[in-house]
Length: 157
Image (cartoon, rainbow, N blue to C red; front, side):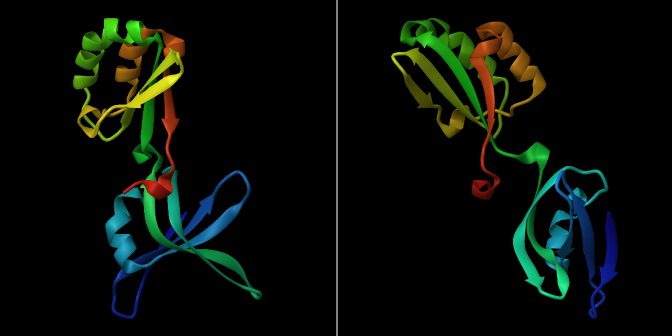
């Protein structure tokens, strides 16, 4: 739920009621944050709220919003598994062709099963993880060799 309030200076701010599986909490979104994250403040929008808690003994705790990140914008790592280095080298050029079609900020990690090793691709090989890319990669490498890992929101922009 969202209710809009106005400060003494007539600037809009929001009071959100955010619900998860464990309960409900009130979130205060002051004018600067409200202006910056307004587009994410829709009912039923799935968001992460980053901020600090404000609590005292007489009232329920509140969260003071510092940043909002929609679920869709969470940073991801795309892990691609190969049985060995030779298998990777055999498919490397075709793999890069698939990856080049998707430009974005999600990191690609190549995992070699035998011997165990991995290589993080450079920022120039970043992709935008989406269903179409995942399907191409699963068709190319096999379902069990493609995995998406959500990264920590705290470390994202």
